[in-house]
Length: 608
Image (cartoon, rainbow, N blue to C red; front, side, top):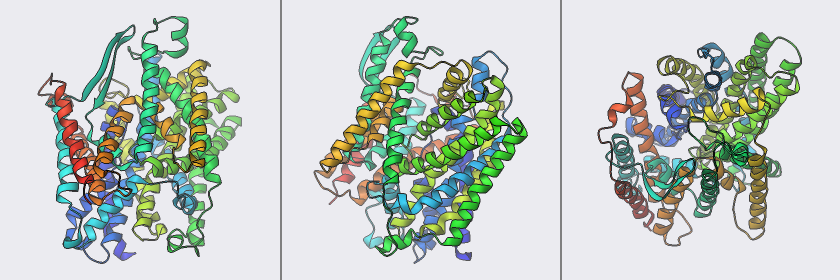
């Protein structure tokens, strides 16, 4: 244990910094990047001499596990906690302040629940051969490059570090207005406003695409095309018409919300299918392979994981009892949270290993969780705005549990690929989550006091989406059934596509299509861009080169690093609007940036 203390302490300090500063960036963008590559790079840079030794891989792995844990809490809190303030503002009421104590308590409860469930199922989901774990493999490649002798090391100068610099520079250039943020491909005026399809200049998305297989990226883009087609058709509807009422909800001039309902319903079907499929996966036996030994969890450790779940549920029930008293509402909510946490944490782990944590739609699983919690609350006659003050913190706990699974599954997979026993990372993961559970609610309170959650300064797009669900279902008892039914049909079609492809020896995950429909269309377009550049560079090779993986990881790390620096600046009082030095960059400049970022990925993918 003594040898593991330095990397864990380093990771805990870094996770406090990362989880706090990414609160602001996440509330603005509605997405949080995976920071595991950034943690590895930071540890590599600061402890270069130490990681070059025989214990270098273990040092970097443990630093990664502890250093990324707090970001799981960041995503879990900022996606759901703003619902209270947003719902109150939407209904013309003065919003209450952020309840720091409740958020800390429920974040800790969710962290314990997610940590326990993922630890208990580690052997099963890490032994599933259908889960490619793209970001875990990228992290493993970075660690291998750090600990390998310089003579045998991949070309990190032209791949990892070049991509790191280019990812940071292009992200900064778009923020200052030197480069346009996207290259318009199609634009037309519609009844509800301008409809534009653009290829985004986003190093993070292009890097994610560089880690995914082309079929997976194409499926995500296919989902994005379905979403864009729907938005185009909806844009031609007259606001207030009978058709528009079923599909379009106008909030501040934004007409995208109906597609979120469609995407959420598609995600619901894909979620259910993924869970059923996962239950049929046979875990490796310890005697089968050396890999099986790495996934074994000692009996006493399993008892500790079970105790973490029990403690987390006890904390959650204790808070719920103090707020709502003992009764049918308390019992119903407690049982619902336990069941949904068990199912959704499993799904969170699967999603991370399927498409990576940066692109993983954890908000999709929380959409399903929020939907079920609202239905459970309605079933026991609790449908007032006062109940939102209880329901939202419970959702925060569930969301933190799912995000913990999303992060830890990738980190544990990295340890497995590095030849380390996975249970050795459990303590580092738990400590990282606990640090985030204290830091993130505190920063959220400061952010709300300074800017106002749901305001133009902090739009909290995920929180607005969930507030739409709470408003429509819980408070007004109405749902837009047309997009929901259409989404269910699309979900069934995507499942049918996966089943048919598997019979032909192909991998076309239904979840990838659902992800493309559910997330903003620009994400699917950016991911496909990165995948195409990588595919063209590989020229038909079956195996991705180390330089290709490192360049993709560098792009993700560079974008995350720039956002980290900006987040620190904002917390010290800097106004992001001061970065806008150039106000109207020519649209072609986005094309130049895309060619530069994608060209680097293509160049490194050509390596033998």
